[in-house]
Length: 31
Image (cartoon, rainbow, N blue to C red):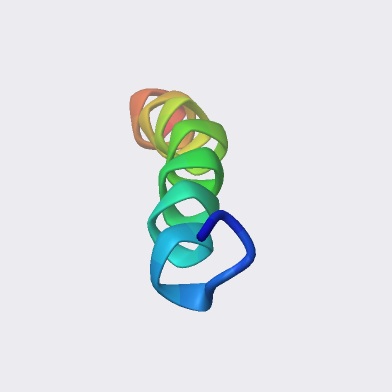
């Protein structure tokens, strides 16, 4: 089950999102 893309994709998206979100806030804050 955990090997299926249907399960993995949301996890990857959430992980990437958690990395990008703080960075984008910091970037916007500087600008």
